[in-house]
Length: 231
Image (cartoon, rainbow, N blue to C red):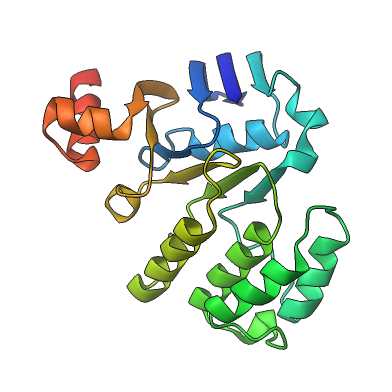
């Protein structure tokens, strides 16, 4: 379980998170939704220990995230791959750092995603780079998988393949996935739980199916209503 307890985070005069309380359920896929600048990326970085809260605390299974990094696979929004590497070299680089690297799964996902590990990262398309980032992240048998805008700027066919990969390899009850995105309609059918963030505050959170049934709306419509009421 991942818990935010009264978490605030400032960057200069900008308050990225404002007294946030969130519980991310274990063994579920949670959608962390909101517009750009809502605090989604900041939240993920707090979970990974890349940032620390100014107030409150973030707990991962009751521990400080700095003591739990081995349990987390994190896919940042920025392109962090070295262009001079082949996919095989990048995989070797990542596998040296993490004991939960699964070589058989790597080979399986490589074929499923239509990638060749002799491809040079600096010479492949944007969609192939997105799939390579996902490959390197999901090949690990991590308990927590954090994805920051994994569909941003990607063509529709690549988006579908990324979503299929997540569905195919999700281990319900064993793994927890948090997907940060403003592309809600693309993954609406994938998520079990939702958290709507706006300007650093939680506007709404709960079970995705229950919210849809209670309100008779899609998650996109629910978010629009929640943000309109907040404003």
